[in-house]
Amino acid sequence: MAVYLSAALRQELLDADDHRCAYCGTPQANSGSPMVVDHIMPRSQGGATRFDNLCFACYRCNLYKGPRMEAIDPLSGAVTVLFHPRRDAWGDHFAWDDAGLTILGQTATGRATITALRMNNAVIVDARRNWVRLGWRAGNP
Ligand SMILES: [Zn+2]
Image (tube, rainbow, N blue to C red; front, side, top):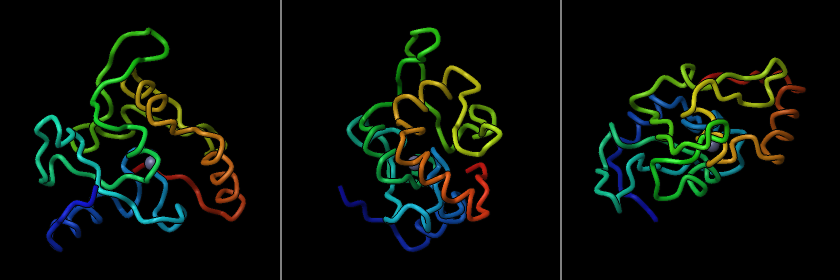
């Protein structure tokens, strides 16, 4: 669904997220499509269209996150809150493997978010392999 953002708010988000998906770190320039605006708390649950509830996300992360804020931690099986890009530090919950291809969950929240948003799907891992070959190195969102 299209979201109206003021130019100032859009710029604030672009600066904060460095033109990357706030979840999987995919740069917009490598994603093949514009980032979408994600309501971290969905509008259907009362989430506001304000900076502290918005981030940029790639189309797939936004699609698979859907209208939820929790998912199952695959290690414990427990329902766990998803990563919150405005409250949580990416590096506290995720890390890159040595090859820079796969995101590793460091916490229950990290593992649940990777699984729910399919952040290591085969297509994105193939794309990361090409970026690494070209000298691009994964950075933290
Ligand atoms: Zn993403």
